[in-house]
Length: 87
Image (cartoon, rainbow, N blue to C red; front, top):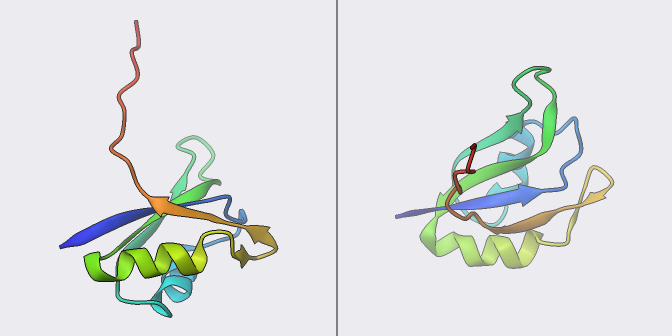
């Protein structure tokens, strides 16, 4: 099984490959992606990393509060996306 981790407060220049490299030191990374603004294409400062179940807790413990590119990042388990009421 796999779990998805949320990674926030990323430097604007962070690429998916950077996330993979940072997390791979603590276990197997299945995929990673940086979320970008639809209109500008610029990073929104957060991303997601899909990892093996057995590696997730170690990755959160090791990387939450660590520094990446001069910023202290936030790492936790991703939550289901909540649909906003658009009425």
